[in-house]
Image (cartoon, rainbow, N blue to C red):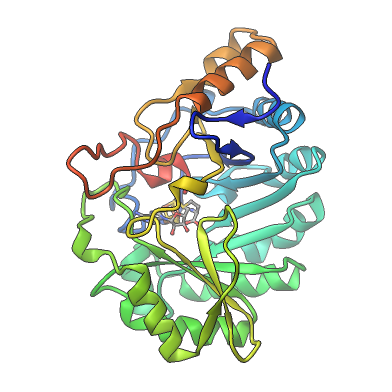
Length: 327
Ligand code: SAM
Ligand code: SF4
């Protein structure tokens, strides 16, 4: 048995993203159709015990040191603080990406259960545009959620903003100001071809250089040394915090990627854009022992490709959309 989850290109994988549900209370245009998707049957979703067993194998055997809960919307999964407590006991960094709408209710409980960091998605600071983008009139509640996260002691709180040309790219300066004023780190994300409605085109992508130029115009920044994290980070020259840009399309970070993913229905994915999956749920429910599960994880990572092929003729859009994979 290996001691690391290593692929054929020498990349060691230590970052696990767990989708705890495919369900969501929003319908963001860049992610889900207006009517939602057909939800997975409840008994198809991994139990807290199954999720924790998988995570334990990965932490104990392969030194996985970061776990992020995502979805769908993770906070719609009942009793989420219980799962957080079970995963926190593994001793790794534990984070969550959320639309933020339930944080006014849940932030303190999640923090107390051991969640360490939180990213809140927010793509517009204008109520009407926010409602159009998410198909929910919930901007105030999400902004309250960001405040609730800070009040609960999450630090840093990050704000994910998917930038789309002609949709919300005129708000980059507003988000820079918002981040500085609130003491949160805004991460601008390039729009990726993982939407369920097939609206993605390259014309909608605002590339990293353009985002960076607009950030610089709003407030000068200087680069921070790159890590395996997908965001290029910059610090404001006046010392008022940081900002990030995730250039998944125009300047992919595949060569340093250390992420693997587990879907809500227990499929292990070695890439966000993977077109094949390993059915870990079947192994778990067939009574496989830890060695058998570990062997399946190792084989999946070993077969990882060099990188995604967005904008090349051989790009194949994954069957699942973002909300079914977990961003
Ligand atoms: N529901 C939670 C949320 O919205 O934060 C967690 C799941 S969501 C799929 C995770 C992240 O993926 C969010 O920050 C969201 O903005 C981002 N996302 C969704 N669809 C995307 C797309 N097509 N391109 C880029 N980012 C996307
Ligand atoms: Fe739901 Fe998050 Fe997708 Fe929006 S981005 S529809 S909140 S899963």
